Image 1 (tube, rainbow, N blue to C red):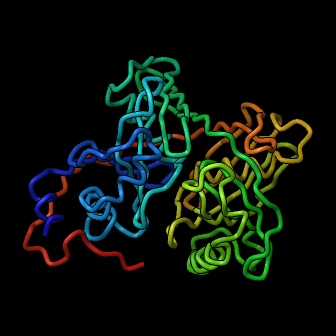
Image 2 (cartoon, rainbow, N blue to C red):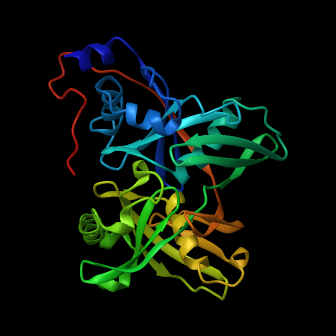
Length: 339
C-alpha cells in the first residue's frame, strides 16, 4: 500500500521521444530523490521500492509495454557534466544507452537546458552509469537535425565463446554484448524472425551467465551480458561496413533502433585487428529501418587492451508529453507484462 500512496500523492510527468523507432520516456517530475555520490551509485539506490515503483508504473502495461525504455534524470557526478541519467527498462536499470543519449541531447536543446547554437553544434556532457559521454547536437534554423555522441572506450572482450551450438564474440560498449550472425541459426534480421531471435537471445544470455567474458575487468557493477546482437551484412566494402542488427536485451526486450551502445560494441569488434582503426566506419541499420552512423574518434587503452572511442550519429523526435497516475482502487497496481 506504500507504493500506491506514493504514486497517487504525486504526479509522474514525462516527455517521450523515439530514436530510430525505439521509445525513450524521460521522467521530468514525480520521482523521489535517489541518493548516491555518483550516477553509478544512484543506479544501485534506484532499486529502492519507492523509486522502482515509478519505473514499473511507466514500463508495465497498461501505461507501457514489454519493450518500453526510459530514464530518470539525476544530478551529474560533478559540475563538468550538464546532467546525469539512470536508464531503465521493464527488468531494471542498464549501464548505458546510446539511443537514450541521442534523445537526451535533443531534449536538452529543445527544453532549453543548455544554451544552444541555432545554426551549429551544441555540446552536452552526460554522466551515465558507465561513465561520461558527450552529445554534440547539430541544429539548423533552430531545429535539431542530428546528434553525434562520443561513447566511453569500447573494446573486444573475447572471441569465439561457445554458446547454444555456435560461437559468439563478446564486446563492451558501455554494456557487455554477445554478437553473432543471425545466419548461424538459419535466420535473418527481419520482423518475421523476431520470435525465434528473442528465444535465442534469452538462451545465449543464460548460457553465458557467470562466464568470464561476462565480467567487467574493473567494476563488477558493470558485469553481465546485457544484450545479444544478431547481425547480417548488407554489402560492406573494405573499411566501410554496412550491417543490419537486432539487439535482444534484458529479458527478451527488442531494440527497435540499431542500439547505440551495441553499435559501439560492434564497431570495437570490426576495428579490433585493423591496422588503422580510425578508418573503420559502420552504417548500422535496425530491425525497424532506422540508421546509426558510427566511426572511430580515437584509439586508447582500456583494461589492458586496445580500445576505441566510438562516435555514433542518429536523431530523435518527440512523441508526446504525459501525466501518469494510479487509482488506489486499481487491483493491477503498477501493472503487468505479458513477456
